[in-house]
Image 1 (cartoon, helix red, strand yellow):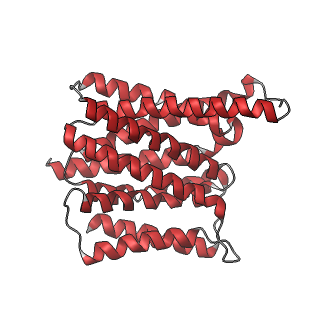
Image 2 (tube, one colour):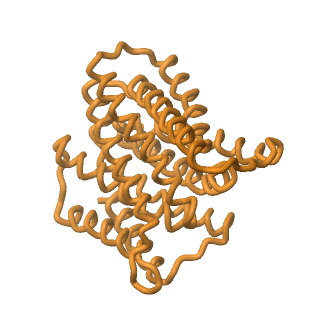
Image 3 (cartoon, one colour):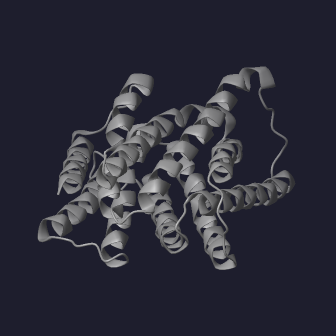
Length: 292
């Protein structure tokens, strides 16, 4: 197989893995809360990154470590923001907004890496952002501001990948930069929630928590999400080592299709007709973008 075929396989794998991860996230967030779910996912997800880094060792410069660390802050913030949105909204409407992420990566691939863009590609990227706006409208044509967290999450993840792609291209490897970014993301999130919980203890009455036994399933699901998320990021990390970042980003844009199917299966998610229209527009634009 040539490099392009490997890129397509890796990007498609990332898309499927991330779609599965997104669809599962509602359960642990609902049962455990945003902070425990985020911490478990980020910490458990360190294992696959560490294994890949050990299997493919390479020296890393201080500059690459510093940039990866900054990227890790955006990575962790993205998790907290997306789970804030999914804690109140259904899975499908929250993760349809993820179409913004590949659009941001594609724009960077075009501008930052010198990849060419056609008029059609430019139009399709604008259609993706327009579709995201439509999805945020409710039945009364008012913006659902609770989905704004999902938008901010994808902007944060977009900035994460912009920095990581730059590091990976300069450094020539994805394993160590992703591991450093994940460590920083986990530490930053743990520190943030530790400070937040300390403040909450002084301002709120003591709450009753469910027994640990009743939390086994959501804890296991959060751990599984951490593994799946890491594998998806490693797959797209490989894509980022090539000059086909824009193409790979177009392929991962189909991820919300899997989320919509699994959301309907697991949670009986329903979207308003206008939201389905926006979803359809985004998906079709993303698929065409990946083909051209």
